[in-house]
Image (cartoon, rainbow, N blue to C red; front, side, top):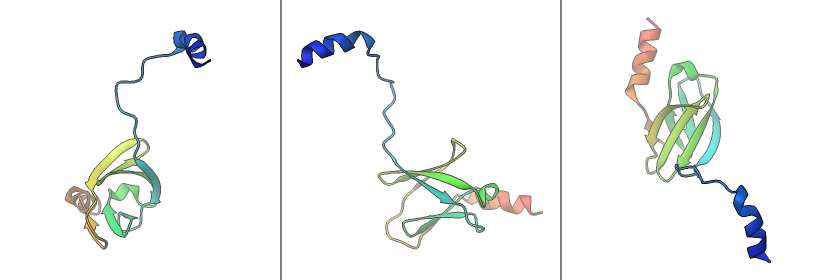
Length: 100
C-alpha cells in the first residue's frame, strides 16, 4: 500500500531547495571567429576570448543565458524572426582594446 511505503520513506526525505529547478533548454555551441554563436537563425555576440570554445546556451521563454565554464557571460532577449545580430557593444569595445 502506498501510505505504508510513504511512512517508511518519510524520515529520509529532505526539504527541497528554495530556488526553482532550472528547466531551460540547454544546447552547446562553438564560438565562431566573428565572436558569435548561432541559434535558430540568429547570431549572438560573445567576448572575443571565447572564440573557438564550446559554450552553453540556456534558453527559456524569450531569454537566452550564455555560459562559459559554469560562469554566466551574458543574457540576451531572443528576437522575433531570423537573421538578427544580437549584441552587447562592450564585447566589441573589449576586442578593439585587445588588438591595439
